[in-house]
Image 1 (cartoon, rainbow, N blue to C red):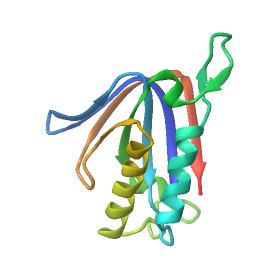
Image 2 (image 1 turned 180 degrees about the horizontal axis):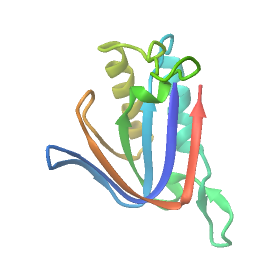
Image 3 (image 1 turned 45 degrees about the vertical axis):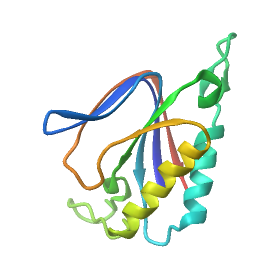
Image 4 (image 1 turned 60 degrees about the vertical axis):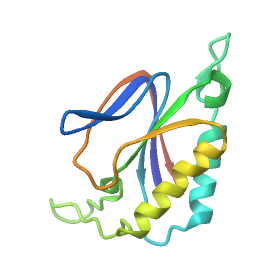
Length: 145
């Protein structure tokens, strides 16, 4: 599983000019589920995101987690995160888990986040989405499990 975590001031997802997910201060998560991932991996990733201290405290130190700041999450499924670019010029996506299992695990990931008490918005699995954001920092972390 690969999750690109972007600290944002705001983010949104549109499908055909309709906003389907939108947040203010928090995290934009681009989520790739790979072959071999299971519920245990999803739970571990969600717990890591919830506890990751990447927001500034009163002294400007990155000591606060998303719950500490009352932040929100926008989760977007993105199988292209698992592209293999080692050979040739056309990426291979063979490492990405195929639907419907990948959709099920992405939804489980989002549910784990929500169960931790976070407000979670999402894109739409498999849709052609337009994602916009205002990165805060910029501050971007890649979580590989």
